[in-house]
Image (cartoon, rainbow, N blue to C red; front, side, top):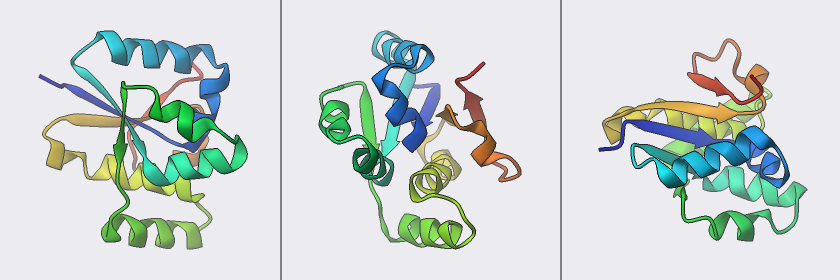
Length: 128
C-alpha cells in the first residue's frame, strides 16, 4: 500500500543531474513500494527548457510517475503565476493539494523550499 506521495517540482527535476539527496530519493522510490514519486508534466516541460534532454531522462526513470495538466490545474497554475510563482512550482502546489483524492499523504520534495513558504504546502526540504 502506498503511504507516501512525493511531488517533484522543476528545481528538483533539474537537480537530478547531480544532487545527492535527489539521487537518494529516486533510489528510495525504486526500492520502497510504499513511496510513490510524481512529477507534474508542466514541471518536466519547464525543466527541459532549462536543461535540454531532462524530459527524456525522466521518462526513462520508471520510478517517476506523471501528473497530467488538466483544466483545474492549468487555471491554478495561471493564477499562481500572476502572483509570481513559476509554473513548475505552481503545478507541484496544485498536485500536492489534490492528493487527498489519492488516499494518502503527500509532500512536495524540493531543493527550493523557500518557494513554498507561506503557501500552506507540505514540503520535504531535500537540502537538509
